[in-house]
Image 1 (cartoon, one colour):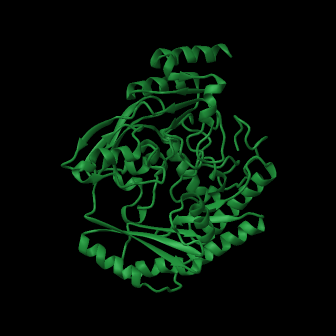
Image 2 (image 1 turned 90 degrees about the vertical axis):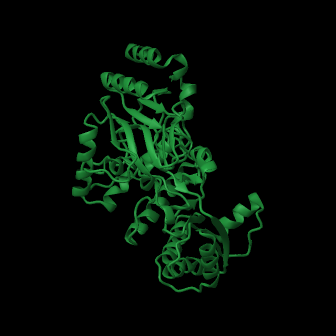
Length: 440
C-alpha cells in the first residue's frame, strides 16, 4: 500500500473512527456490486454519520484527488452506485434517521439512508404514506431513490420520486453545504431540486431530503385480468385509459414469466394464460367500485405500440438465442425485459449485452427512452448518443461541469467515453464475467 493511501486511511479514520472505514480487499468485495451485472471495486468504503462527516470526507477527497461515489442500499440496476474509477464510496446506512415529521403539512425530512418503506411505516398511523414504491422498497433507501429518480408500480397515478421531493440539503464536490427548495410545493427561481433528483450523484452528495407525504386511500381494489394473447393484454391498457380511468397500478406479466413466478410462490395464477394484468384502483369507496366495474367490462382495441414492441423484443431475444421474459408497468409503458443467461459464460454475457442494446435501440425507434426509472449509470451511458444530439449532451456536461468541475463526483457515469459526445462505443467485455474488481 502506497504511503499516500495509508495517510488517507489514517485521516479518514480520524473523522469516522476505525469502524467507519473499510479498505481491506475482503471488505471491499461487497461494494463492487449492485443489482446490475456491472462490477467496480472501490479503494475505500466509508460510513458517514452526519453532514459534517460528509463535508470532511469530501474535502479530503479533493486534497488527495480521489473520486467519490454515494451509495444507498446497492439495489440499483445500472451500476450507478459503483466506483467505476475506484476511490471512496460513501455508504449512507448510518445516516438513517427521520429528522422531522410535519404531519399537518404532510411533509417529512429524512437522511438519505432511511429505507423507503420505513418512512411509510412511521406515518401510516396518521393515515399517510410515502407514495414512491420501487419494487425494492423494503430495502432501498430514499437517497438512492432521489439519485436515480426511482419509480415503481404506482408511477402511473402518483409519478416518480421527483414528484414527491420538495427540498434538499447537499454537499457540493468541494465541500460547500447548500439547501435548495424547502417544504413548499414551489419556490421562486430555478427548480434545483428537479435538476438534482435523477442526476445519479454526479452533481452533489445529498445529505437531507424533504418529501411530500400522501393520504392513504379510503378504499383499494385489486383485479386480475387473464388473457389468451399478449396483444389483448396490452391493448386493454389503452382502452382503460381511453375511458378516463387511471389505475393506481397496472402491471403485466407475460405467460412465461407468470409460470416461473407461479412455480416459486404458488399464488394460484393461471398457468395456461399468455399474459395477465394486475390492476389496482383506489380512492373514495364509491369511485373504486365504479372503476373496478368499468375495468371488468373493457374490451380490446389495437391502439398502442406495446404489442408491436413486445413482439419485437421476443424476436430480438430469439435471434440471439435467448428466452426473454416480460414483466412491466403497463400503465406507463415502462418495460422490464428479462434476458436469461449464464453470467459465468463470457460468450453468453457478450450476447446478452448485445441483446439488451438491440432492445433499447428498438424502444428508442418506437419513441421510448433508454431508461424509465433505473438510471443510465454505467450500463447505458454508451447508448446516450442514440437518444441525444451532441448539442444535448454538451449542455448536460456543461451543467455537470458547473457543479462538479473537478469531475471527482461519480465519474464514468451518464455520459459516453467516446472522443466526441456523438460517438457510440461498444461496452468493453470484462476479463471474467464474475471476476472481482473488473468493470463490465
